[in-house]
Length: 133
Image 1 (cartoon, rainbow, N blue to C red):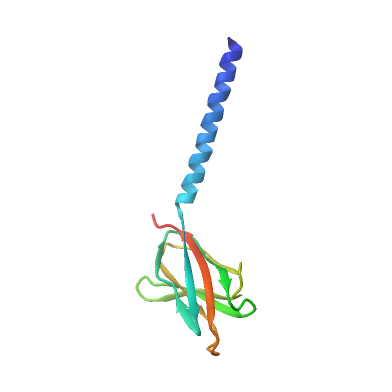
Image 2: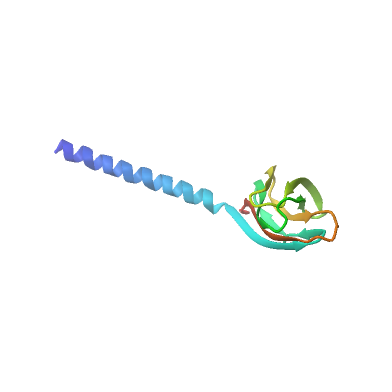
């Protein structure tokens, strides 16, 4: 009888642990948001505005027709006056990524830019951010 009780208690503990882990992973995923966009530009291109919660905002290039060329990624806060949060230069190549950490939630946009040399950058990128609460 004691053996049965111990086995049953172990099963209950395992089920409770699995439920807690599942709830924790679903909760953390619920607070992340992302958008994939297509871009095509010869000088500048701006993403649609997006609202975020506090945390990190990142942009990752998924594809680009000029993988050996540089592009500038600027993040701007568009709450009230447009404010430049930061900018970095990355390659317009699959997997190139830029992130801006420790930000307060608000409304933002990315601006992708390059020299106006007559060439066109065309591709896709995904930006991720904490979902607003």
